[in-house]
Length: 621
Image (cartoon, rainbow, N blue to C red; front, side):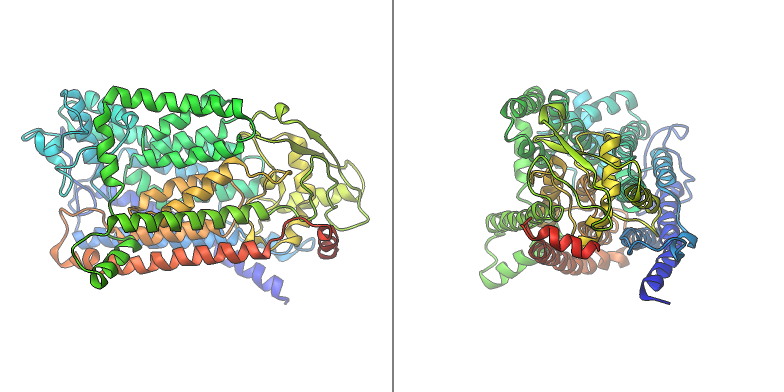
């Protein structure tokens, strides 16, 4: 048995356990909420007939924390394995082993499972942290005529909603934008004095945002089964995101929905700008995403001005309504350092070497900006170099046939950017051959893009520049036909995305690179912050970056197990006092590894040169 066949067989054997681990993780997350109040699930006051519902069995605290740990570990390892299985082997011969292997559910089923799990979790008490109690209190303040940006829960003694807020957040004002505050106020208005009903309304908003985001991503990737499966793993059926964003009910989900929709709607600059503004007005750090469309439209100032103007108008109107006092809490939070961040280690080193008279927040802020710039530069440098071998940066080209010389070559024509509203530059549309050997090659390439973990190439339509949720049939077919050349001419592990034919980077690529750099570099990081990076990665081509971010989320999730202070067994304080600081070392190692990988991968990539077509022919032949 050849090594390729052994690898194929191993892929088939691992597909089942990976799927089982993901399913078990999602099930455990549901069980944690279903059991009711525990160290993982804050109690909710209000009439028992009102949702969310639980069995209210008050489970053993050690058991429920063990369930949470198992959900995180199984989900993280299963997801990493599944993403690794989407790395393609060499295209097998007809009738090869891969077609006989067991395979996990297809992408459509994964999307259905993820959406169903999100809907179920909306009817269960939130778990993992107490942030949802803060949201309910901020909305309560608005309905009582107080500003959540100048008051904390402690300013409402005896209130049935504000009294539920846990330490250490009782004195903290809101750090969220005016749109998030408006959603919280609507939930409070509906829920009244019932904390349960208020939380349930917030959970419905949150689950709806998660599901809509998943459906948008699924629609965007539907023409490419391989890319669709990967997108389902990264977002909709991602057990860690279901644990953090849906079961944890964090407001970040709303911001992610707006930003993903904005990137997919950028062919309509007015609508895209409004969505960008809404995302920033929910959570300000989501504003990094806006730099993606700004880069893509840098040579089209009229469209850029329209999109930016709409976004700015939404943000300005929102903050004008709530007042300038909403800015101060965000400014203060931006200087914080979370306990699991590797910058906490840096802070300790500075205090031990220089002295304990300062928290060194300013120095750490400067250092984090430098790390962010380095990571963003490394990732975007790799993206700009990861272009098709032999493809010159011009509007007309003749792609290499999939099996080397001797096959018919598709004819390529160019269309100006005006005919593709979502693109900042012109793009090529390739018309595939309709007969002869090239047609067979094209159908063969399509045959292997089946949407299964055990046999998935990364080429095909997923590498085509796209300006919206769907691409035209001609472009998709042509990319399927020449995917063999791209797969053979470049190691998959170094792929980050495919730029425009003229070398420009699309908005999702720039936005994803910046957001990945942000979550790895920022001093204040919590597990659910990684959700925006994963949502953006689902819009671009597969790369090793996927697994770096999943590993980052896995480590952060274990560091904040659970992300609550109250209601924890005293003999488990070591989870917070010992394990959490030690996991900061893993985050530091992951950050260094990401920077090194991106730098080395970019060095292996080469910009198109005169000899590139010859190299591609040698590899393809």
